[in-house]
Image 1 (cartoon, rainbow, N blue to C red):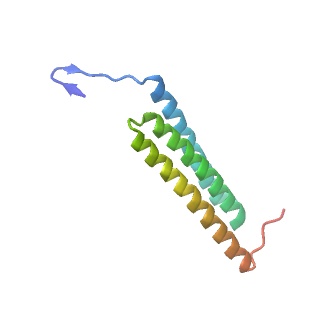
Image 2: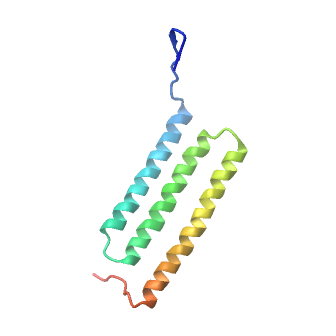
Image 3: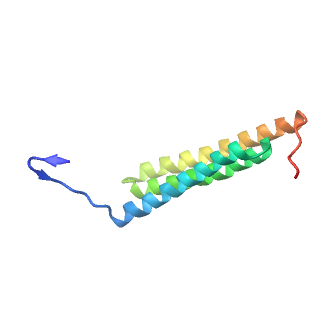
Length: 110
C-alpha cells in the first residue's frame, strides 16, 4: 500500500503464521478428500474419505479464521457454520450410504 511517497509494510506476526498453518493444513485435508473421491473404488470408501477429510479440513480452516477474527460475533458465526456443515454432511452421508445399500450396492472387498 502506497501512502504518499512512503511505502507502508506490514509484517506477519505470530498469530498470522499460526492462522496460515491451520488454513494450509485444512486445504491439505480438503485435497486429500478430493483425491479419495477420485481414487477409491466404491461409494462407501469415497463417502468415508469425503466426510472425514472435509470435516477435519473445514475445522482447521475455521480455527485459522477464528485466530484472525476481531469480534465474538464473527467467531460464533464461524463455529455455527462448522456445526451446521458437520450435521449436514453426516446426514447426507448416511442417506447416500443407506440408499446405496437399498439398491444392492455392496461394499468393496479386497
